[in-house]
Length: 127
Image (tube, rainbow, N blue to C red; front, side, top):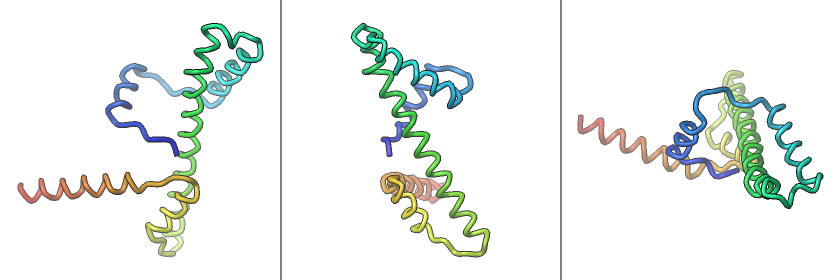
């Protein structure tokens, strides 16, 4: 799993990109094919070619990893809910094990969520 982006960095990225719709997967594939074409055409040694190799390729790879992780998360959560809807009693650890098998470790996220819940409880207690 890729390192999730910090919320402040994601907010900065969203502000830089402005409003709009995310690219379709077809558009992303066209960009990736163009990147490959630049490398094959011998333009990889020019400034644009170096930029494609060193900057654009890793960005596209991060996008591919994020899309793969999102699909795995959606599938695992949907399966967990479908099991519950069928009357089974799936435990959260089952979902975590399924995700871990897909390379998605939520340990740090769970610790952070627990800390936030604790803080919210303390704030509520102070009223």
